[in-house]
Image (cartoon, rainbow, N blue to C red; front, side, top):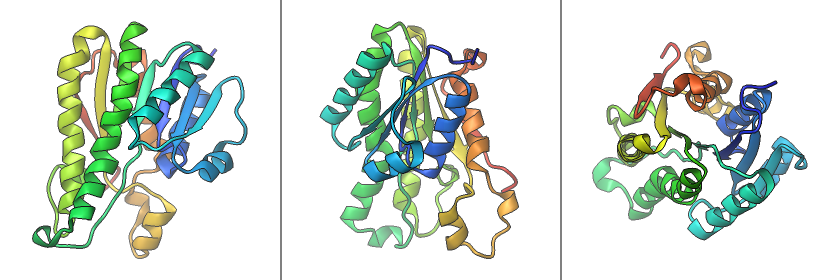
Length: 235
């Protein structure tokens, strides 16, 4: 028997590096998985056809109606939404803050904070109707201290932490735990290509970060509310 047998976990950004690692970790723990990503082909390549414990849904996280529909599909198939992992997001680095284009600002806020708000707006009422749940958000080390030429990204990920704290204060007495993880550099092919001379052994493996997320969704983390947990490897 798995730790999450009979529980349903919704994962946004499921076709990405961390999304795939989280999906595999929750599958190994016995959870039903609702896998959401805009990349239809990526979902199919990563996870193959749906089965009794998997439901992959191509949806735009900027479209609240699409996420409401995804939640209804999940409820129809699995009967509950017990956890939400908000992994979808985006990174940008390039301009000084005073030169940041409007479209870059909006994109960073929408991808990192807006996607979280839309997913929570769809999932939380259904969690509450089912008696409670767990939410894990993904911030970033850049949220803790702004760096040159990445102000929009740092601000957006900082918003993730503040939203986590606010949601926890609102929901902890309603049996919903809300926490977030703060990775440093995640060991992905994209990051290796961008930083070819880096010592990647010091980075955080997606699988290691996924293990922390699984813990935060589990009953073992039932006393943790509003935490922003660094998962920084050796960085």
